[in-house]
Amino acid sequence: MSDENQLAEAVPSDDEIVADVLNGGDGGAGNRNILELPVRIVVSIGSAKITVQQLLEMTKDTVVDLEQLVDDPVDIYVGDRLIAKGELVEATNNENGIGVKLLEIVGIGN
Image (cartoon, rainbow, N blue to C red; front, side, top):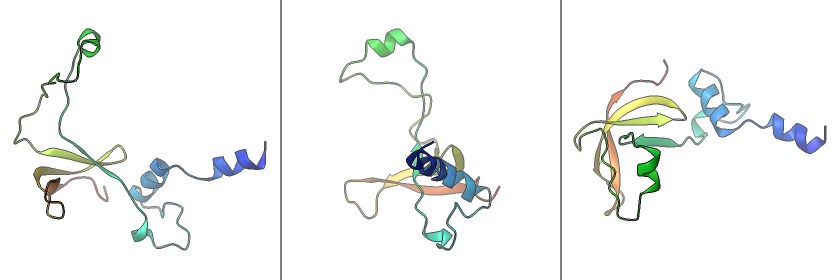
């Protein structure tokens, strides 16, 4: 095995780092401050089941009806772990943007 392959195997992926942190580890941070590690959150607003035929027939203006209502809470994930529920709001730091207000913390430290 080349040195390059060994190095690639030794460097954890972002998902592995997040999983380690969520399970009480230091994310491989060693001497780095764990609180400074970046994590990406994903906000899921809904889902829908469609057929392959419907998928193939989609065009630019196709509307996909989600199973959720506009006012339903959204799910907030780190990696594949649900950590909170929230509601969509107008962003505070971006006048044309969207934000999420946390309503309930469900998965941090569990």
